[in-house]
Length: 190
Image (cartoon, rainbow, N blue to C red):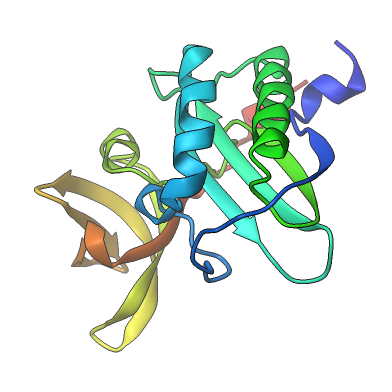
């Protein structure tokens, strides 16, 4: 296994145009993907037998960054490196042909990773029992950032154990969320 297989990250420069509404930096929930991008990206990902988890467009200094996160239907994060590369090449072609992003941009296609993004309701359901970090769109009880154990996810609501107290966070209020990978000695045994 080569050194590049350790980090399944692919960068491509391209030119295109986007007619979507401006996206606030840092939003990373599936429903926030602009429809104009979703209709271009999702068929490519599904055509490879994978699922679209998230598209995050970071604007600012050029080149812009488009980060596309894909996963297996099982949600296990085991997208092979060559699978990410194939999706990346095909996406680049589609985005450029549609002139979907104005000017230069970098395209990153990767799997969710250790601190996996929780962008869909099914991601929250699969992460039950894990430590998570959730940032809400609006303050809940005076705060927007929560870190704790995801005890349950049902009826569109995440229940977290935060410092011994249970906190209910509606999925509609989640601006971004991810699991917190807890390293153990076994991770460093090799």
